Amino acid sequence: MKKLLGIIFLCFLYLTPAISNDAVYDFNEKLLDKKLNTTEILGICNQYKSSNIDLSQLDQMTLNIAFSIENYCETIGMRAEFKSEAKYDYIQDGWAALDLEKLDFKFLKNNSLRISIPNNPYYTCKINIKKERRITFYDISRRCGVEEITTYDPNTIKYKDDADLKNNWINIIDYFYADANKDDFMDLVIRFQIDGSNSMGARTMTAIVTSFYENNYIQIMDLDKRYIDQSATYAEYLGACSKYKRSYNFTETSITEVEVFVGENLDIDCLSKKFEKHHKTFPVKSYSSDKPLMPQNIIQNKKTLKSISKNISYERYEMSSIVDQKCGENCVYTSEALIIYKNKYWYIKGSNDRGLKAEMIADNDLLITNFNSTHRRKYNYKSGKIKRIKN
Image (cartoon, rainbow, N blue to C red; front, side, top):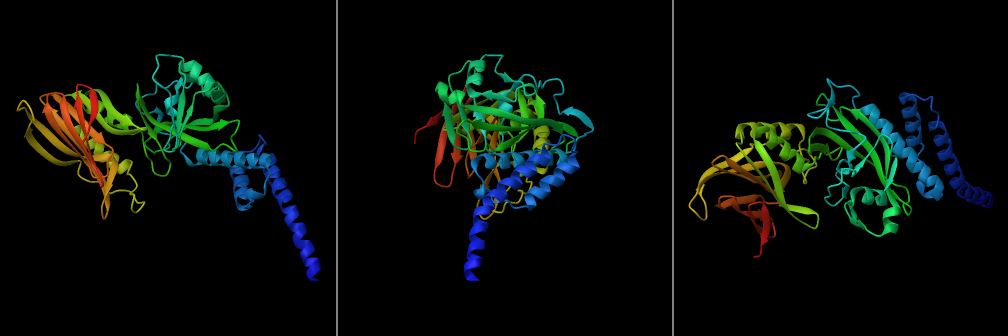
């Protein structure tokens, strides 16, 4: 009897991979039926999930098909989850500006991936997501007139040799419009992959453009955490409340340590209301509890001070961040700085875990300090240029 059970057990071990492979092919065959509606597809996807197929038992070809099924089911689930209709049938602030046949590569970004293409003057540095389902990094480099492309996922990978550029590519899996963030405006949802000849099953990722105005845009960076593109969001809010000009940043190792936004005639009440609404609409998850941070007063402090040099009188506001946090016993939004002199302003945010301080040295000349739990770093902003000050 024991011998018979042993034989049955061995047969089961040898048959398991074949059974798993056949199940994957069966589900794939079902999903290829073009007559299926969304409800029927989701039903098959739920059956696939509940089947608990052991991926470790699959051969590589079948494993790739299994990954494709999971990616397809996730995309269809997303289409079903998001509202397909909205009060306003266009992307907020930009119904005439977003051209799907000439889409900037910067939109293919989320909280876990960023594609970096050096600045270039080429108007051809675009992708047609309507027609181009695959584009190699080599094609992108030639289209944009650059020699190197970098991705951060979050590891930094540089593609420079022709072989690397030709053997890695972007797949556009799907795109559609939906009200992803429930603001009564449509959003552009893009499902895409970074793939290559050595890839063992590419992961399908999501990019969502939820607001677009000329060169400024807001993206939902993560469907769970609702992270957004920080620089573009600050620029958009400042643009709505002032004569905003541009921002300057100090970046090393892909981290923006300091960013200074410059403009004139700022309506501080308008900006405060924008930030207050942002706290409620896009709350950041706490590092300590994984719960949304509580909204807090936007203007934490206000002082009238004298500049370090020239004896200039200016206003300094301690502002609550809308994206970054600092943690002690609990986590709260960290502090940022706003300096106003006559009709000019400088809004300063930084990368830190204990807040930021800014002081005016002279007109258009600032001393900035990032406070961290283990160290502090100082920077000098002067007329559009930022330098780190050595301790």
